Image 1: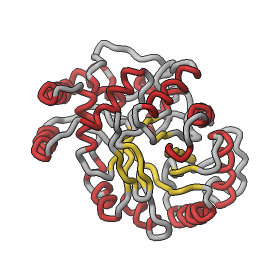
Image 2: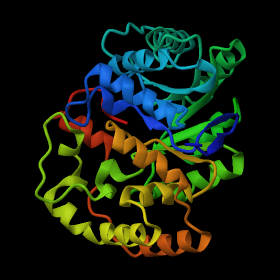
Image 3: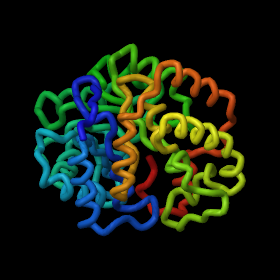
Image 4: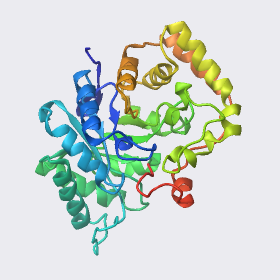
Length: 335
């Protein structure tokens, strides 16, 4: 298949990327390593060139998996998105502080080794620490000049944090949760990205799978599945969110596609600077998710759907701080 592409400022990527976190954990048992590698290669064969990971995910194991999976693919045709945590993770000795130049360089070198590559295309600060925007941006500028990274980004920043950082070293992309179920960034962050020419990488673009319509109020999730502590997946909230699924199914029938594809098409419809990165651990999910790039909502359909969404109350949240606080899933899953 011929995959459409989009620009995250200076990086050209497939219109839909692959979120790789779920291959090592966070959504229950993942596939065996060999099968996971096969699926990553299958996604590449189907046109996906954008692969996202982080040192936080299962504490370095996800980076190691992604390094193995991408090793056999042409490096100049793939874009690796990686994220560094702002504080020291288990096993990291960072007396100078993780966000110091020494700390960032040490984290980067370790990630390069795990990813088996000489450079990272998009290197993102995973969570924001107030008051450090300029110092981190300064270090990122040095790393770009040295060729260690091609571009840098921030995850879930405020508009003010973006402006501060971008004034020092241009930010290539913001990575935050964005879907029909989480639209808070529309108020100021998305308009600012459009204004400044910054890309936006949307994680959990189908609501951690809820918008696929494959989950029901009677379902239970394993303890190592983060949906077990996301309040949107409580029985009462899943039932209360049925009007959203009914709306999505209505459009899926109209466009002759799946509900998940409507969820992704809607995210894509928000602007050509937005790139969703759904997780996909089965071959049929890869075909379905990547196929959403060919589901086009007309401007009228997008506006009509968005107006309808605004009339629906979303019950429950997906708050990373709550997930970490509960401590009922393994460390390393907070986005």
